[in-house]
Length: 263
Length: 326
Image (cartoon, rainbow over all chains, first blue to last red):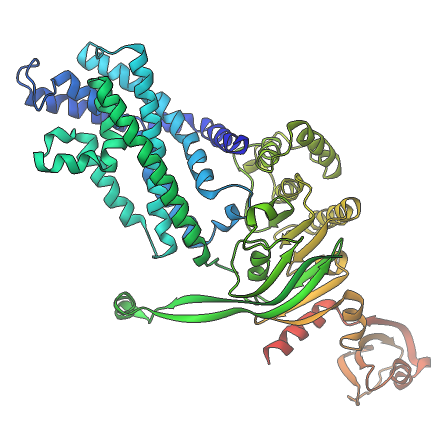
């Protein structure tokens, strides 16, 4: 485990050198939250009104949390990196090291995620307080559980994106698959909670990755209750095991098909 | 004791073929065609502990593919590999603890971190206790003269400094076998010489077995006692450097400066390479004639200066490459 902590630490140290570039990238987060704030303010003619069980405040905080998760994930960057590594054969220089490649990807990407997550969380809370003037009624313990749930959500997301990107071993470019995955997560779990979709679709969403990587942690933050909390952690646990098995399986099978350019 | 044994090793690559133009691109989507490239064909050899072996060949000969199979990066289609008693295909991670790799054309270091942080990182991934890593860094600091730049981010280092750090990073876990893939590519002659001295010293001090690939003949000549030449996926020569240099072509070069102009013509075993003014350059094939016969032709009284040398190694190697192409 020590080596994976070092991988995480090294990536974190690398990204700390680019902290100002990362902060500049947060402008789009501010714009996004501003747009959603105005959009929901327009839709909710009366702030005390409930739409699909959400008050305006809950709706804005929901988007703040899902957008923090989405923007700190850097999924496109991750998918692109793995696809390029596989296609160019650069993955070879990671294979000859005494670590698990999927573990390496997970911990190195966490080094980027954590830094962005901390900064975006601070920014998100500040923006939420500016726009709404209040914080959701949530205990410290619940906040800790939400943060743990966010961590699991990201780990699962990274592993699922890694699995998708590793399809590059079999086809020329797996980026379109990532594009599809990202748009599903973005539309069905990030921008709108799943209660906003037709009732017959909701059970499907509930057992899909959308629930564990995006909707779950945000819903817990805006409307914490122990039943949902237990349910989310059980589903996240199941998805975590599944994504670890799946990513390692596809890697182990795929690596045998590796062609390295120039030898 | 053999540290590497390779038996009947083969590897094919499936490469997509696309016909030219837009039509070809569409066709390749509907009905893709593939070519099978036989990168390595039934090669066998073994390498003893502490040996420094040059593993060379022209571009596309299959040397890097062979090395990647020995390190467990690529999987062979056929044949057996034994590296330090392990099968790279099955025990890749276990083997990684005992081997080191330096790819001159590929950065393995974290470019935004300092060499010191990189060495600590490599120490950690090879599960070496922190104190031992510190000790190793101190040792290499002196041997590889790193003091000047050990705390400078790798991205700001010169190529020579970076290669030195790459070698140190690959040695931090004291590998028993070191694979050096073109370690001196792009370096100036002074730095090249320094790197060669360091590799030699490392081999002497730690008894590390070194497998070197390089297109720079001086690297091979100065470092290795044995050479394996690969061409078109096959071993075309596996011999000592001494045999290669002195016996492979059995040719010598005579450079002579004459008092008077001599009119010579090619003779069986003697080829005139240059005849300009009073300077002559002859190639003597010792299988057909002797040096004394060639000198007699020149008339010893007429010679001001003479130099007899071996055919340059570069010429010998390219002649072997060409033979392999026929």
